[in-house]
Picture (tube, rainbow, N blue to C red):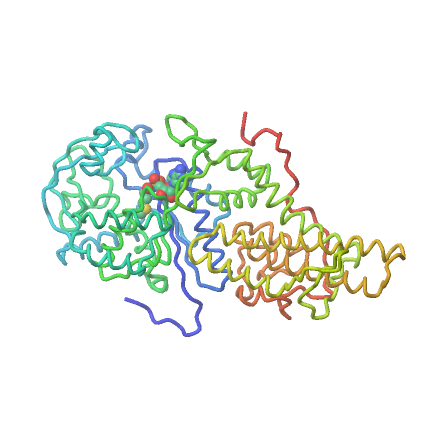
Length: 563
Ligand code: MSP
């Protein structure tokens, strides 16, 4: 099933998000996972890979037809309305997804039912009786122990569970237990973060059971969902069919090269489906399992869990208000670096937002870039000075011993760290490597005091003006070149702002400097090489001052979106 690949063709990379229930309005949680996927996709594109980034909507849930009926709409019209909301939200967030799948599309329904048919043929799906606790609010069965633990109420919504007995088709998950255990234990399938992997392995060791993959159509049921191909009395259980989206979308000429998925991203709520059921289904289908399954934790809001009853979901209007007040890229930065990427939940608190905004952006990269740009404008009429091949600098202190800045090494180390963290989906750390490089420039300027050197030269008090001038040139070239490299590492989270900086400094690595999505002219390994003859900052090129990238924020100002 694999297509021949060109030698020397860029490495394919396939990144997915869950497909979101079309009944909910998009909120911070959906945006967060999709933002992580966007940051990862951008980082991998920057590294020169051939990325396919997929998101979309899950539309065949029973709830959809009910909600549509309440509104006097057809299920499809209701689904379309809401799918469009997700699309609009993702556009606003600046996501660069390569496709958006809706499970009601023919490309999905036809292929998903073909996969199920194949599993019926191979005996991996079989008919049997099923009795269990069904959670109608979540459209899933819960195990006896979970049902008991929650006093036979939904662990998610608190609504009563129903005892259901059905004749169902089952997927023989039990058959694949040894295979799956080996895959996860050996790291062939990486389940991340580590804490989640241990949980999953713990549960697998308790034994895998067959899972229902269909439900019988009852009289009066809306005509909604994909029918079992061999038995139209049954409908494919929405979860099983939804998982297939990852494959249906790339199961066509030209896209096969993206399989298997590099990383499936989601939150911890749906890890079991992705780390256990899906890889076994794929194995049964003769398809390769995903490389990494990554489940982050949850966003909570001002210290409280977000829920329908509390009505405290952070929705798109709130995110838009933040983007309006502080810029979209600042919002993206905050969410990616402060979000629940690891195993612990994260709080969306306004005070924290302002703190991070000021520290990392206004006083961090923003200030460093303005300072360096302004000094080049002031002392060199905006012409990038020449460091004459110097890749290091030793600062001088009044006591006579200085600190050595080996910029080529410092930059290489941080670039390597960013790349390594990215492949472990530690995107926050990957971005932080960029910020560290920028902070290093701040420290360098504080230690070398180029403004004092310039003042002394100007006033005629410098003991050796020629040497002073050369130091000034070297300090400013190195600071600007280090910031240029830092900006590449920061770009995946802040594509708009970094493109703006590149335009001001005349050093854009983008095919089209005004379009942050136009692709890079070279891979990161070349772009981030210190003083690269083609991609490095060129002595003699022109730097313009430009607007500050991030204005300082007043911590006392009211939170955006608050009435
Ligand atoms: N439709 C299924 C997924 C099928 S994938 C084959 C589904 N949809 S959902 O709309 O409920 O989306 C769940 C996902 O939304 C989570 O796994 C996570 O990616 C995101 N989030 C929803 N709430 C969240 C938070 N409070 N915090 C972070 N992300 C959360 O499940």
